[in-house]
Image (tube, rainbow, N blue to C red; front, side, top):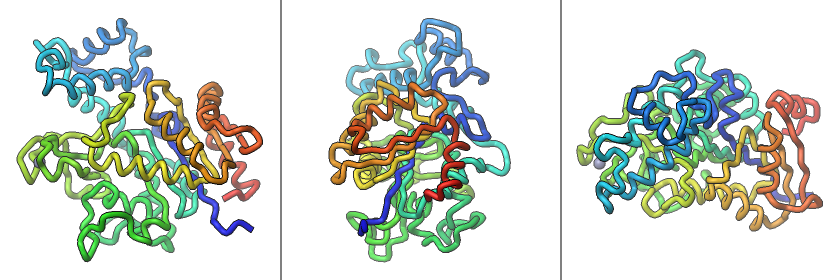
Length: 357
Ligand SMILES: [Zn+2]
């Protein structure tokens, strides 16, 4: 008998949000239905050499702007994406991204995502490559949140609230004041026993201060779990007065973790969770070739996993994308099980039929 309980990691990509009841767009064709300011539309037409919006890829464009802005302080006009007003600022595009990804309908959760989350055990983790709040809302619906936060408590009342995935979000992002003796250097025992919610490329509702010397520079504030605080991009930082920015990091190849504060912690936790997993559910991942950091994460985890064996469950309407993820996992056929589902309903049906919770 295996003494260690089974651990599952659910990984979410843009295809998962597209398959939700909100039908959010994937990265290519992201702005198909969005009214855009003229300068942003002109930038995308220039960047992709076409006015055909179905060919515009939001991650490629955001990556270009992100890299430009990271060089501006060194190279001046040669790294400035808005030099002479020819292009646009990263934050201008992020504002449009938020407009597309925000959730305006009620209830704010998607029943399919809630059902998927409910197949997980509290010790299982969720890794998301998405900026949107669809999984956040599903977790808020399922998990009892922090008692100091006034939100409908939902179900699963036997979950330890501060150690639930959403209950730990503020802790993982660095703003929690729940520790009686001050914030400990690493995870507390209770935090280690339960799973995490790790958004590896940031979120449309995470705010941070852009001033490097400010204490709010290396921590992120998740507005989603504190809706009554009404914090938003552009408002002044309480510590230094700088305009707050939204924490979104596009897949820029190699992420400079030493300058991104808590993002390094999230990726480190993600690697550890993937190493200890014996089951992975990958939902809607396109496995973009440019996301070298994510490729490294999955490959490194498969290399370091002590038992080798993994139960791979890939949910994706695009079979080629599914196969790309399986190839990335790399382990030999003898060491893994592989189940493919074209829809999340198919996966949930198998869970019900086999009770593989
Ligand atoms: Zn500040």
